[in-house]
Length: 86
Image 1 (cartoon, rainbow, N blue to C red):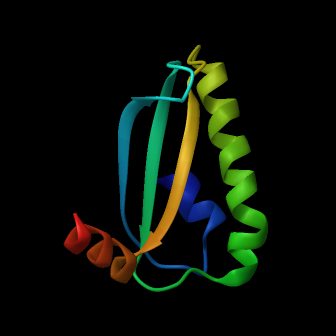
Image 2: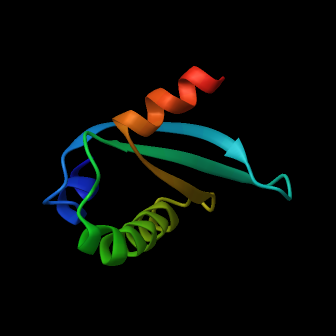
C-alpha cells in the first residue's frame, strides 16, 4: 500500500485486491486490482503506473518471488459496472 501511496500521491485510492493466479502459459502470477475513488490523475497514470510495475517486480525478485504481477486500474464506478455485468 505504501508503494501505491508513493506513486499515486494525487489520486485517492479506494482499495486494492491481490489474487494469486496463472498467466496464459500456466506460470504463477499475481493479479493486482487497484481501485481509485475517482479517475486517477492523468500524469500519474502516464508515468507512475509503469514505475509501480517495475518497483513491485523488483521487490518480488528481492524476496525470491519470480511471479509476474498483472495490474488493472479501475475506478469505483468501473468496478460497480463490472460487478453488475457478472
